[in-house]
Length: 246
Image 1: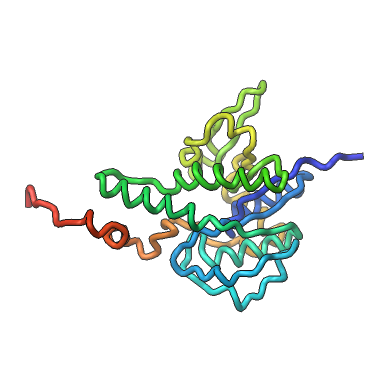
Image 2: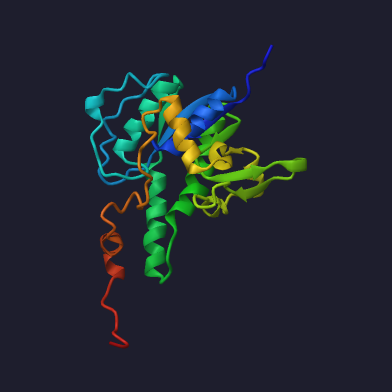
């Protein structure tokens, strides 16, 4: 008689990669719980969002309003809910809006200090593979999983973060901040596949996001106006620069 594998909390962004990650873990026998990270991005109207049931079908769709496109928008929350319903797994929304403000402050602060920030790296370090692990422990989950194209090598008990098999989609660089001790609690199910394979698996599994475009933009800068965001968040730090050479 087979024994069910441990519980895993899957960060479901509503995209094809995290959706297939959840489906693969479910197929492998894990007890899968889906989680959408509410970050408070522009266009969100989440304050009226109701809790989901195990299949994600008890939420009143009238209370989900469409925001901008991105990795954490209202559209994506609805997509993640649909996938969870298809897989028949529990699905929850975690309110990280307050914590996400720290990432926006970091983004603005780096630009004001003359550096170029990478907010996705900080989001993974602080939230997805940081605070989300605290929530995983609260529900007695042993692992946190995501749809990143990276791999964890567990050969001989020594944990190493490796590039994804699909080097064109490799995302190991945005996970470099995860401490080695954290790797033991992480699962990256799609890292051993190419993107074309992941989309085909999603299609074969009947997941409604199989042909959803990849998100590229920064979720909290939907208009790509970085300067405008910096000006609004820190108006006292913005001043005309000196023209050195025309």
